[in-house]
Length: 497
Image 1 (cartoon, helix red, strand yellow):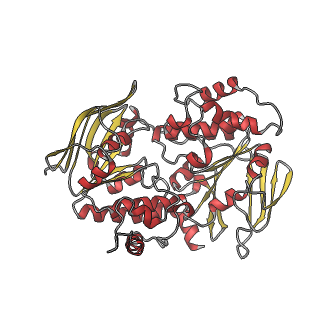
Image 2: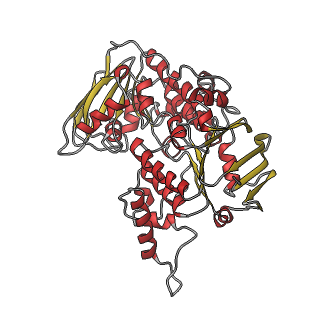
Image 3: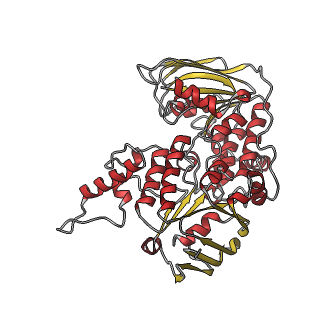
């Protein structure tokens, strides 16, 4: 079969850092090609070159045997290459329809933008993906998962010969992933070439035909997916097999540290009660949008429930909490919140790592106290978490996803928090960094801390946690030991309820 895209000898350096070194890649029509590797392996840089966002230092790109010189994203799109980037590129102040047609707006006979036509076409594409969203809705009003699907819809809507999907399912649950997979298979039947970047092994083996592995900017191997196993693929990525991705579970029986009683997420919702004890990691599981996120955010004032009582280490608090002061109040009580969207809600990407870590220490001080320097604490935290960075002065935005997540965790470890509330602990994180984060969280619990966590990856919850609380209809409908849980009985509990 003749290749549709051929990238040959592609190299790219950013200053003294070599992102790609003599990488070649072939994409074939009617095929899904997985691109895998740890964070920083060069996957996104290679695809950004194909998408026209980054210019290579050396190398060539051919489409149907003809050399392409792509100097910008619009040229790539005109050549038949569309991209869904890992970092969402939607403009929050525009509507869904305006984002989907950005740069390609249809016009009326009078030369003005045809907004009605944009909304009709955008609505039709969204319905094909099973999304009941109003195309006139501002992107700023959407959840992370909804934004991800709009980004995917925009890429598919472009009707190009090559579709690049960079971590398309990072914000999707299992049902949404299956919806996406159906559309990928449809694109494959239409003869499109699809590049699929993901850290989720089950998706790679379910949807892809071929896999290419990058490591430290070099191509390690290209194999038909039928010739590799998850174990051998991990070995290619990290240079060794990870036999025990999850650390051992902790010993049960710690003292209760957090108790939630009579929480009502809606006036007609059943009351919620839960207890979190020292030494344990407890999961909130269930289908997307059933209330897991609202339960967790009610504990810091970022969601306003219809009543409830929270007790933290003996101190009783009536809910709802103040939206503006809840996070700081909880930090003063030794609680840390790690949001799903670490870039917009968690980290200050333009500030140094030292600032991002020490901010938790500064907020613990009285309002009018003098700022202090915490160099030793910051250095010790970066060392203990094995953060890969040039130093404490490096901006947080320069780090890989896994290292950014460690820095966010480090903020609360440095401040002495003993309760962590975590949304999606390994979103967009490679498998090697996942294992490190799981170890850090288990060590935190073993040292007497407690963690309440939610994740769309059910396997992650089963492997990492001690107990799993299944949420459905804005209430808890199941409580099971994680060691006895399976994806099947978690889904049963969520659906039967």
